[in-house]
Image (cartoon, rainbow, N blue to C red):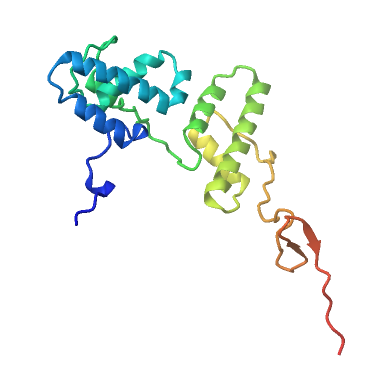
Length: 215
C-alpha cells in the first residue's frame, strides 16, 4: 500500500493557500480553452480571498490575489488577467550588495567613532570647549577600553592613546582625573563573596539570617 505523505508530494509554492488551491491551479493550466481557464481562475481567485481574509487590508487586494495565482502556477497559467503579469525576477529580487567600511581602525577597542570624534574636536577653535570635548573623549575611551578588555586601565594610558590618535593635538595634563569606573561592585541582589546577600526567585534581596547552631 502506498501512503500519500506531504514529504512525498510536490512542494507548495505558496503554502498559505494550501494543497487544494495548488492542485486546482495546476488543473486549470491543463484546460484546453482559455474560456474554461478564465472561468475556473475566477472561482479560485474568490476562494483564495476567502481563505486569506487578512489580505483584504492590503492595498489593491485583487491585484495581490492575481499575482499570487500566477506565482502558484509557476507562471504557466494562461488566462486573461485584469492586471499585468508579474515578472518572475521581481518576485525574488536579489538584494543589493552592502558597502562595508574599508577604513583601518588603529585601536579596535576604541572603535571608529572615537577617531571621528577626535577629528571633530581638533577643529574646535574655542580653547575651553576644546578642552571639555577632549576630556569627554578621554572618558569615553576609558569606558570603551574597560568594556572590551574587562580590566582596569590607568588614566595615563588613555591620555597617551588620545595624544597618539590625535597626532599630539589633543592633550590632557597630569592633573586631569578621568571618570572612575568600578565594575567590581556586584549589582543589588547578587550573592557576594562573603555570602551576605542572596537573590530569591522573586528577584528580591534577603539578608542572610542563618546563624551558627549552638551545640
